[in-house]
Image (cartoon, helix red, strand yellow):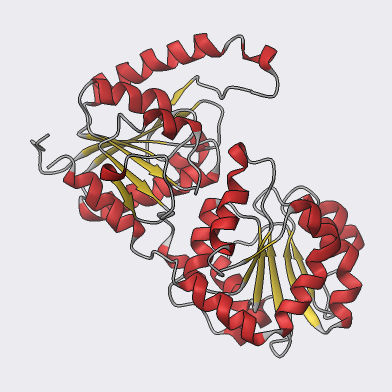
Length: 368
């Protein structure tokens, strides 16, 4: 397909979670950097977080009434076929009116109808898969795609001749020019001469991580170790009443806005294993303990974490093990500088700092 204008018109679809939305925004930003006059339209699912986050990032978005299929409660799906048909028809109308040169999907409910209809109209379709195990939508669309950009080398579910190992598109400001470690630690009210653990459980938080730290807080402080503890919304108010931010070595916070500063502060990071979190951690290059959320779709967080653990790039611990082992494992690791060095070197090798540029290169090559 030849581009008849000097600037492209691109539809981007993806959402439901930040792991689908933020890669899509990163791709849009890269397109705009190259083609300031480019027209970009997002398509998301009505009622999902992309309908708020995308406009805040400065892009227009249209919503489809699509919802996911609930495999846990089959009786709740009686409206699904009607919403799917309505979404397919609306996606077709959006494409007809916008006339895109290409469409790219980053996963989520809305990308299914949109990319399906785009492919039927002969519009080049590019899929960006964040996880080590593809979601249902992307697996269904794999034969419709002109190119598939993946974040893990060992994905075998896509056709090899059109699959490209690019990594995940993430915000470059997170991993470039980290601030001085001592200054970063002080900004959290902590002692720069002490070892520091950073715990991140996502915006909603992780009850598993929160309960483990709560039970082991005495052991952490007894070992003269500090904790920057991002609780998420889930438990923050309750934990705030029980645990005070003071000079004893605990910094409790619902959300960390300055992730660059938090990463710089850490000697060891404990995290869930979402695709985008892992991509950021690979570029930060600090030793990591991954505790996958076991109820993620297709258990993809476990597969993500195992992909790193098998390469000696992270320590992996199951959700059920964390209550008993997380604190002792973290304390043991933060004292083992040799193992920290090995983990750090191995995880750095998996980083893909040019992922966003490579994905846009591939996208543009399909429409020139």
